[in-house]
Image (cartoon, rainbow, N blue to C red):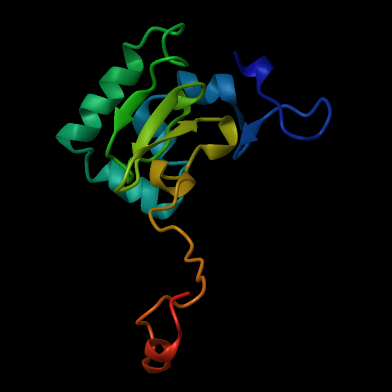
Length: 141
């Protein structure tokens, strides 16, 4: 499975803090937590919540073929991405809709919510009728 995932450079295998993807996937969650950045490590060491445990069980019991067509839907934007999530498609809720996230090896150590923003950019247009005091003197046609 790890041979499919390569970085942008030709022939360069993926490694996270000196460990290959196969080694990371064989590790226990506590062993992986030691390699993660401080914030993600803290959330795992303090214990995953019940909803996060359910998501972890869904990932472990998923069917490989149905994952691309039927992504795992979740509201857990604060779930750290673990090596066993690689190759899984999630639909992460951004407050308005569910957005697809295909987990790749480079995402290990980040949170699920980092890959889809909750706020959209504001694009200002022209002022409408009634927007300013002077617009009441503008003829409609």
